[in-house]
Length: 446
Ligand SMILES: Cc1ncc(COP(=O)(O)O)c(C=O)c1O
Figure 1 (cartoon, protein in one colour):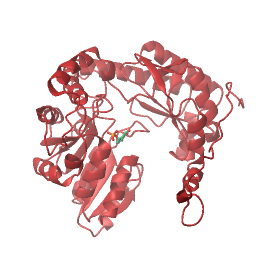
Figure 2 (spheres, helix red, strand yellow; figure 1 turned 180 degrees about the horizontal axis):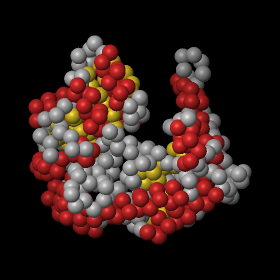
Figure 3 (tube, rainbow, N blue to C red; figure 1 turned 60 degrees about the vertical axis):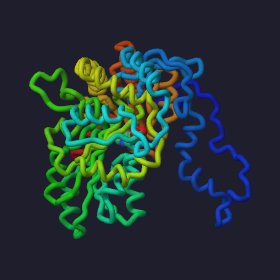
């Protein structure tokens, strides 16, 4: 394997020694910041020196972005439906600004513009749930709602759940909940833990479509286990909402239709399931939701701090959600068709090249681990130099065996951009930088 794939600029020193005031010393005498710099050494070195980390994007043109003097095809965007660039949605915003100003400023309990009511009505209809509540972000929701739902009971946490779910569970623990972890994608392990648990107050927290593997969990199996043991199932489908949805006889692609998320995709009811999702990915807006019974919604209005204490989403975001519902209704299936076509094409190319990816769903999140985790810097530079912008997945954010990069497709990517991506993936495969799919399968079978 080539030791240097591309021209590399000299690395910036990993940890420039800024002088910290004496008060920055820890009680043990060292500087408090050294603990963090040590434990995050690899990711910080990458952040400080890599053109694809902490990059400043100076201009966009469709799904092309400019970083410094280089134009790159963007495969790190979560705007799956391309609503960020959708002329009809952009055109809808000024009328809302004229009527409401730029920012309502009230927290929702103090004054809730009727736009929220309209959003919740349309969302509830789309999801087919009893009711829904919107708050600015999923992070707000996890941090405030998980502690309320868990109270002093026991949380069963998916071991590979998103960091923001972990954080919500940490807060719940600090308020008296216990937390047990079950193995990723393993309903039998969850079943065993629930069967052994004496605490009757149980909450199961997990992801819907996983933000790294790009696969949906077997929601039917998890829902059945949770219900059998009297647990409430809390699912974060940040990446599924807008992309996957209910199944239909005439569906244009395997994502299903309407983009109404993982619960409907699996034909599940909302009985004992709380669905959380966001508009900040497929809908390109700053807003998030909880699908729940009205009784729970009313409780959260007084028990979940962001409803009273956090600032609201900007009016432009409320406007783009409402306009996004219209576009989803009229053209969503066509956009999901394009998204699926791009995703399937990249996955086909990886299969032909014998390159491993955990994605077996054809959803638009494609993680590509490296053969050698220490090559992340060089591989990232090659991608950058070839004009391909991706999300680097570095240690310790992911285990060493999964260090690599994540590609995300959107309906706004062009065929030419996908051609470019496939060409660079071929180059990396030929250089021996990527893991072999056949070897991974053999290892898993052994
Ligand atoms: C699975 C998942 N949950 C939650 C979040 C955070 O969402 P928000 O930005 O709405 O807080 C993300 C963001 O990347 C995510 O991938």
